[in-house]
Length: 304
Image (cartoon, one colour):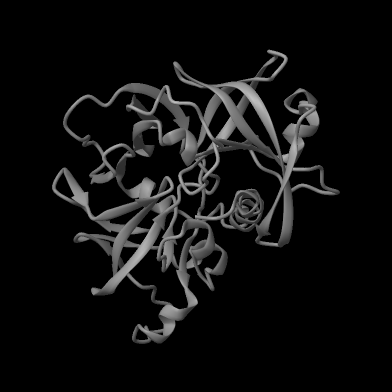
């Protein structure tokens, strides 16, 4: 889990890096569960962590981050794991379900800011490779996560189907949203799905410049650490955020300030875990959709 400002910086940097890999086919391999399997997890402030073994060893906590196209491992793990042959990557397993990251997507990090922001032990982060290899269901109410083979869904009602754009690798999966500003102007946006972001919605600078109506007279600045250094976001408010048939009212929105240059991205912003926490969410990238089933927190007011 990254700070609010770090999420936006990460989206820019990841998009820039991975656009150079657009010709690379998805090569991550996975060991498929029998239909669906409940994997051991913990939740902290809407962040989701999977208990992970690396090459069959240890017990490590990896955050689940659909807003990242990379797999991140704490640099300290290099001292705990035996060296691998040149070109080989560590194999991750979650309650026996195996995922081998693409070599070009594996990065090492000190994770200082991640540890501070989540208040949970974290040794790494698994990105959208998890979602591209499995159907992923996250139940934020009961704090459970299921991994299923493609073509399989968990038993029970899935909720309302929402179409997403998830086949445009290496870009992140997107969903259409309708935002309503404080003066009730309706604004359509394409938001990247970001289970690792603790906000409801964060909007990128080009979109904010094109839609000044997302600003309000009563705004606050929030400082944080991004991948390129200290960054500041602007906190504003929206009357509503609509995704599919579901509407979240009175949402705080994070606005990226104008920059001298912006990296290209198909996303107008990010849809974060504060939105998803009001549902049981089933992500099915294989069929370009997700399912939203409201939980008991759906009608409760948002606090960020």
